[in-house]
Length: 444
Ligand code: ADP
Ligand code: ASP
Ligand code: MG
Image (cartoon, rainbow, N blue to C red; front, side, top):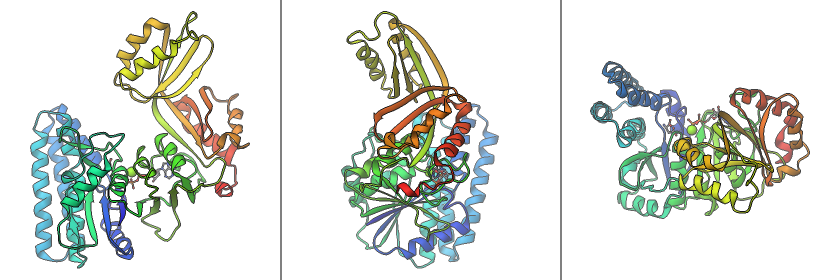
């Protein structure tokens, strides 16, 4: 069994959906297709949840009409058989009626999730009917029947596997089609795997069914050595280890949801990143094999808050750090970076939900300074700290204010904290100073 995930752009138009069909048809054996919503659709659905706050039903109904038109045009462009067109239209209409009803309910986390996951439900159904129209047998599966993910950080993939087995029908088929992003939480409510979560659906399912591989099909030819949205002349990397990919995804590389790699590491299931629009290009393989030493890639994670605790008296006193960490632990807030001096400790968090409570509690330990809107820039590669090129990060210091540096915490990661307004400049400078015109391929 293989799991193939196609992202929003890959299913974003009639032409690209036809492309997906050819890719799927060329891959033999049993496969589960995990599909995102058509590109832009989840953002439109999020805009509905925002308009609910203002009770702006006119805006909501305009979005629903545009979703109706978009999906009906897609159905008309893909499917020829009249009965299949009718079935697809009926399902889309029924999901949009549900959507309109949710948009009139009182806002709650479950209502939010029910709304924002409508895009995956519509598109997977259309795609299933399209394959049927092309005489490709397949089974459409409702992820709400088996994606029980109570713990977002540590999903019970064997439970998902058992549920999946119980859900698939006796009728033999090679192709199962299901929605990314959607899950049921520990209270059995409809929920999501957070934005970009279809990648995570794919690896959770990969581990659940002990797939031989997971393929993530997107709009770029693999994992690049720097963020191509901000930096020119980036290159795809042929091979990353699980640990390298996990660090890069966690530290902001948008190509992968932050948790994508974790479900497959223990089972050693490789993940391939491929471009739907240039399927013959090699892409990136993420696996347990060693991938060569040295710097591989740089990523950046935004919305970081730095907290400094300055205390003349007790900082390095025995037990002081423990007390500080206990406060963060109590408020379930993970710390990403830490630096210390004799009289101060600085640390960063990416989740501000409990910031006020944390500050109120650590206030007793010293003078607190909070700085928001920072970004962690992360240099990743096996033994990156031994790579002479990576040490050129220090050349940045005279020109760019770097708030914190974490070097040596692990052999595979060097992190810098900068003000987000300097992020693009730092990414570009690092690309010039570190990668220059040379390809990272020499490390691979
Ligand atoms: P999908 O809709 O298929 O899930 P995403 O938009 O979530 O696709 O992810 C692909 C995009 O990630 C690329 O188009 C690219 O702009 C962006 N990206 C950011 N960092 C990287 C990187 N290091 N390598 C490749 N793509 C990256
Ligand atoms: N459609 C969802 C989103 O846009 C999930 C995904 O595409 O991965 O966040
Ligand atoms: Mg994505």
